[in-house]
Length: 307
Image (cartoon, rainbow, N blue to C red):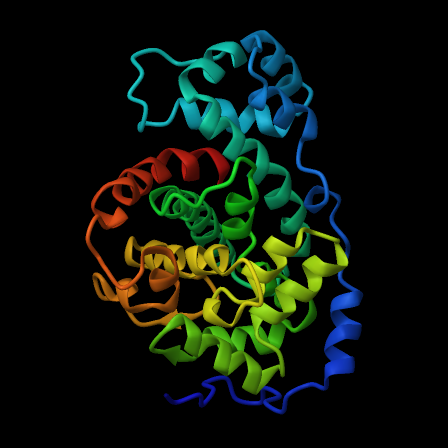
């Protein structure tokens, strides 16, 4: 693998650990990472609830209301008449997608504050599309492997898998653009280039940033080891699901945003450590023949609503 950089004049010597920590520590903390719409979350999990109750909570969040209506009115649903009522939108969208929307909206909005104007908007949109796709696919994969939990950890782990790239954009913008212009073969190779240029890769920077926010150990380990899940000290299945979901999202055309990874070959994900952790060595009963394609199809609605 060649890690030569195409941007002349860019600093290529890695920064020291202390300098990296200092810069990441200076990155703004985000309230949404600690508490994601808890009132709505409690409601959609309740055994008994009224649609009007959920609608009342959503109405207090103008951004969530706008995204909800935009999503349900997307071509994906094929409704003959436009939906203008929050109650109707909740009915058509369903609780599962509503939970995903309510989790992703505040996280994306707050992380957007870290976006650097020096970086093209196209790269940001690609990154968000990839992150949302990874979150949806991560949930589907763990469900297929019968390893899903009863909370939203797997969705958040997928959504935040590349949070380190967002932090890099805030703390090391020039270095990140040099990395983004470097062609590599695999997602893991991106990490090698990042370590060469910055000193830490996006997985380590992301995990360190989330640790400062006191997120759960499961999410921190998944983010830290989503390119080498076999090395995770615990929660290997979650890190493995993020790794495989990353490949599936890229194969579906949702690139990572800040990298130039070669096209993902079909079924190449079945040789990943993450796949073996989830499904053993077998591709029999592959979720890529069932749940995952369905998840990819509904991503159209999810992305239309969120971005």
